[in-house]
Image 1 (tube, rainbow, N blue to C red):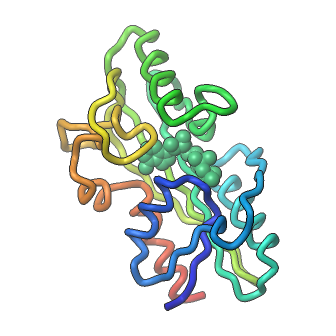
Image 2 (cartoon, rainbow, N blue to C red; image 1 turned 60 degrees about the horizontal axis):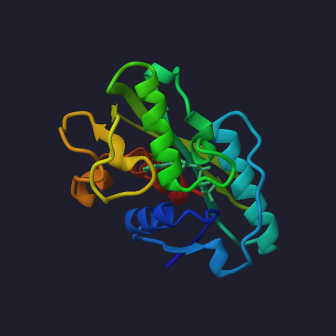
Image 3 (cartoon, helix red, strand yellow; image 1 turned 120 degrees about the vertical axis):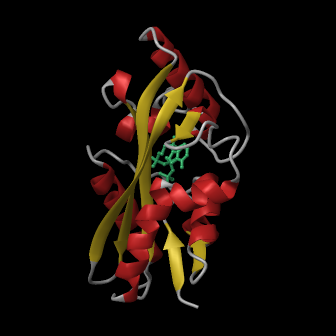
Length: 196
Ligand code: ITT
């Protein structure tokens, strides 16, 4: 089975990507190397995904490696698209998923509303010796000002996907697996990987 090294230390992403890429041996880079800090200072999901995938490719020092990175986040209409690329740090530099979630809930409330259209974006970068590619996926829905359910990770307890009336925290994992920004991007990534 072909090996994919994942340039992420986010356990929620690792779990979902393993589940979605069953034709590959998916190995988080932290199984191969000590975790190191990667400065994601670009202003798009695409460029930040490339920064992570390139950094891990270089650190591995293995010409044959195929590295993929996921840069993702949630954009809320009443907040003019925030937190977007800043989703991981919304509640501060060392914020936990819960800190970020409750900060987003408070900021939506401050706009005087209990819900807003919102969407998730995922950019998946694929880096090999002689190629770099990035694909994207999106999931639209509604951000609400309460956290419901324990499923998924990150902002999922406050996100209701379009066509449903429960949050991703409450819905079965299979629904996120079918609909998510990450699964859509990874479907495209699979096509790219086949022709590499
Ligand atoms: P790596 O950079 O190591 O991959 P990270 O968590 O820092 O991990 P990002 O910079 O891409 O990753 O930040 C993504 C943020 O968006 C983070 O706060 C996630 O919790 C959130 N997020 C991304 N996808 C999500 C999803 O499917 N469900 C809920 N929250 C998500």
